Image 1 (cartoon, rainbow, N blue to C red):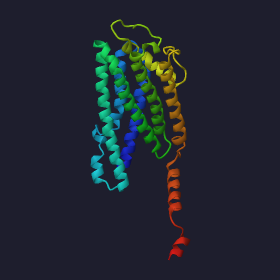
Image 2: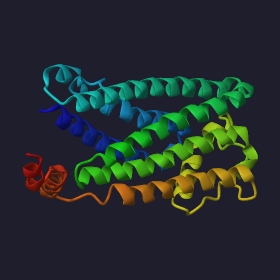
Image 3: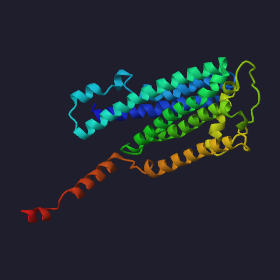
Image 4: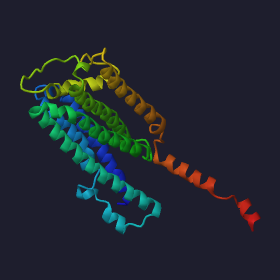
Length: 278
């Protein structure tokens, strides 16, 4: 298996598993209301799919031996090294997000005043990680050679990833600005509102993503309106970029080869110019 083919196979596995995990999380949203503590675990799993399925953590995903043995052009060699470097940064980002998530959850239970200060860090770290994963996913989709079912699954996974990112933002805002939401108290007396209403925040994020809205959001509060509008705008921009740059790809590999052949012929000098140069 060539290096490029191995890289494409890893990407397609990542598309499938990310979409599967996200769909399972959405289906489980109702049961999660009975165990809201598990919502943070869902976020960690979704963020960790990219680390596990599209990183060298698994032996079959390690490209370094193939880089040493395969004969590839220098340009592709440099590109693959950049891919490996980005994967390493993704691992570091996920570990950082996991550490911040654990600290934030513990502070909500033990030190609510500390949780108020950690909420900003919690939101920023998760935003950086998931938006980076979204950008990497869009870049990978743009580099796909042709239109396929795997590309569709990757596109759907990226759209759902925006919703989960919005859920984390709203979950942090529950601590920073409780007046931005219509929830009061806690359905579970021993749990803080940021944990007890985490499933509701996730549902509200997908309501904003699909422009349906949510009764959980306070429409009279600027924080709530800004967060909801931000989620909607990012989702619409994603769809627009997807339509413009990804879904217009050729559907057959023969079309790709024909376009590549025509491009090579167009860049080559004509025989008449060759005779004149002689």
